[in-house]
Amino acid sequence: KLPVTRRADYVVVLGAGLLDGGQVPRLLASRLERGRVVYEKLASRGADPLLIVSGGKGGDEQVSEAAAMARYLTERGFPAGRLILEDRSASTGENLQFSKAIMDQQRPPSPGNPSARCVIVTSGFHAFRAAIIARRLGINGQATGARTAGYYWPGAMLREFAAVLYSYKVVNAGVCALIVVLPLAYDVVR
Image (cartoon, rainbow, N blue to C red):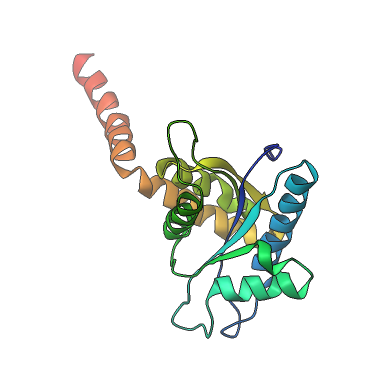
């Protein structure tokens, strides 16, 4: 729900699985439409962003997610010259890692020139974890979520919650240990 930053050099739209080996499903279409809105908002504020579509080719897919995403956008009038395809990734971490490499290659960070700013677009339920991963990778930007059908939220939120817990497994194991040990220690001291 945070407002999109006033300036960014890139909009990065994270992929999701394709239907029938090459069709953009509604979940991914929602991300692409949100990415387009963010891109247009940045351009209207005087920025000159590029849009990176990020997603590799799964074993059951005929084309990469990035190619399907680019086709979806260009068929709806998005300028092909403003698109960059990142088509090697197989996970959110790789989406962001490979997209960062593209941004750093095109605009290398230096002491007087900080890394490129971006807005990461994903589904609303996934934005928090995408932001955590982006921060861990040193990406200069923010994440924003696209609308997602209500029926999709419960399962997706459980999966995201589990993924965040797992990514901080050492910290969470320590907290769980304290929750078990403190009551036992209290009984011993008492």
